[in-house]
Length: 392
Image (cartoon, rainbow, N blue to C red; front, side):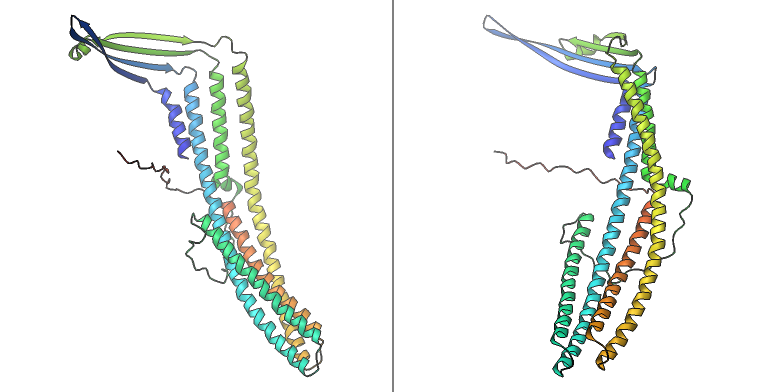
C-alpha cells in the first residue's frame, strides 16, 4: 500500500514545475618564474522546466496511479479479512481437537469398563477369548485416536502462532475445550449493500478507473507535447560577484511524434484490452461476492439439519448401548452387539462435535463474505540493520 501511494505521488510530480540547481568552483594553478598563482572561477545555475498538459496525459497518469493506490489499499483490507478468518478458523479447529481429546478420554474410560465386564464373563466361562481381544483392540484404537488428536492440537497451535506472526512455540493462549453456541444469522442486506461493502469488489472497481485513465494517457501520447524551460546561470572570479552576473534564457519546445512504427497505436489497443479485462474482472467479483454469501447461507442451513439428525442418532445410540449392555450383563445378548453399539455411539459423538465446528466455520465464511473495510494503522517500513564496522 505504501509503495502504491509513493508511485501515485511520483507520477503526479510532473504536473508541477521542476527546478534544478547546480554550483561549482574551478581552480587553475599557474607556475611562472618559480612563483605559483591560483585563479578561481565560481559558477551557479538554475534550470526550471514545465510541460503544458494540454491533452491531459500527465493528469491521466496521476489519476491512474491514484486509483491503483486505492485498489492496493482495498487489497490490503481483503488480505486482512482473509487473515482474520484464517485465525478464527484455526482457533476453533484447535478447540474442536481439545474437545475430541476430552471425548476420547471418556470413551477410553467407558471401553475399559466394558473390557472389565467382558474379562469377568470370560473368567466365568460366559465369554470367548475373541471377545476380550476385540474389546482390548477397541480400547487401543481409541488410545491411538487420542495420540493423533494430541498431535493435531500441537500442529494447530503452531499454525496459529505463524498466523499471529510468532514463532511456532511462542503461542500463549489457553483455549477452552468446548465450542461456542452461535447466535442468530446476521442480516445479509441487499446485493447492492454487499457490493459497496466488500473491499475486493471495491478494488476491482478502482482497477476499472485506473485502466480508463491509462487508456486516456495512451491516447494523449499521440499528440504533440509542449515544454517550457527557463535557465539562469552566473559565473565570476569572486563569489561576492556571483549574483551580479545573472543571465536568463527562456525556451519553449514542441515535440510531436512523427514515425514510431505503430507503437502508440499498439499501446492504445493494449490499454483498451486491459480496460475490458478490468471490467470483466469487476463483473466476476460481484458474482463471486453474491455467491459467497449464498453458499454460506445454504451450507449453514443444511448443516443445522445435519446436526439435528446427529443429535437424534446420538440419543438412539445411547439408549441402544444402555439396553444392550444390560442384556449382555444378564447373558441375553451377544458381545458383537455390544461392540457394534459402542462403535456407533462413539463415532456419532465425534461426528457431532466435528459438525458443530463445521457450523462455526460456515458462519465465519459468511461473516467474511459480508465484511467490509476498516481503518488500519500502516505499519512502519522495515529497515535492514547496517553491520557495525570498527574504525581503525
